[in-house]
Amino acid sequence: MTSQQNLTPLQRQARVLERLDEGYKTLHASLEGLDPVDAFLGSRWSVWEVLNHLDTEKFVAALEDIAAEKMDMLPPFNTREAKLKSDVAHLDDNYRRFRALVESLTEEKMSQLVTTPNPENSFPALTLLELVERSSGHWTTHARQIVLTRQYVEAFNAKERAVTFIALDPDRPSELGVSAVGLLKHADYVAGSPEVLDAVRNSASGTELELNGKNTDEVLARMARDTRAGLWAVVCTIGSPSVSNPVLLKAAEEHCDKVVIMKAGQ
Image 1 (cartoon, rainbow, N blue to C red):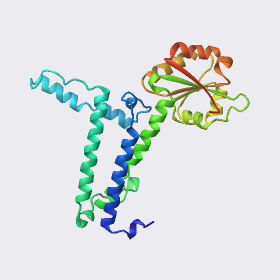
Image 2: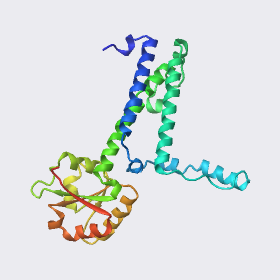
Image 3: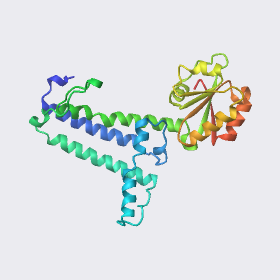
Image 4: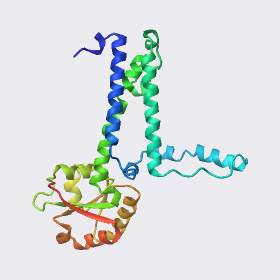
């Protein structure tokens, strides 16, 4: 394979265009058959996402226009299907603009320095060509993220707001199958007795909720509430909950919209 250093600027430009086209196709493949409802189901929000959610500039501007009698009513809210279609169309437009920009660059313009060094995150000064090279794989990276998110929206039965029970093997509670490890890794909450939490701790990354026999309703009510808000929750038991902890299972069925039970070996 030819190294980046051995390519001319025009060859590197051509590679950027190839990666952009590949990323665009990969992104659309990741969205194929997507139910608009599923598009709005996910797990954690970062602090930045919360802050962006709270950015109400357009809403405040609309209210100012109403107060100033520039308009009478707020525009109607889009359906999720319309919102998704609008957002994808916006991405399509950005792709076309980005591609046209890269295609139009002269060698002189490509060599222009456009960023300063950022010692805080070891980010070097970049030319315009280097910057678009780094950006050209962005779509492909996030297309993989979309594929993974869709897999876990389905695995957690997120549309049904389900809480998933993982029944651990009584003899080998720490032995987990691929599916169980995946759920534990992506769950926002993992509940269980101290013994159970010790067994799965190496695989779980969410918040631990310890069940002590007295807080069953409290924990399950919290899980039910948070799964309705889009979070993902797992309860682990030693053996099948219908046998080892029927009280816990009954509480889950009473509080939660849906309960799914899977064996840890899956």
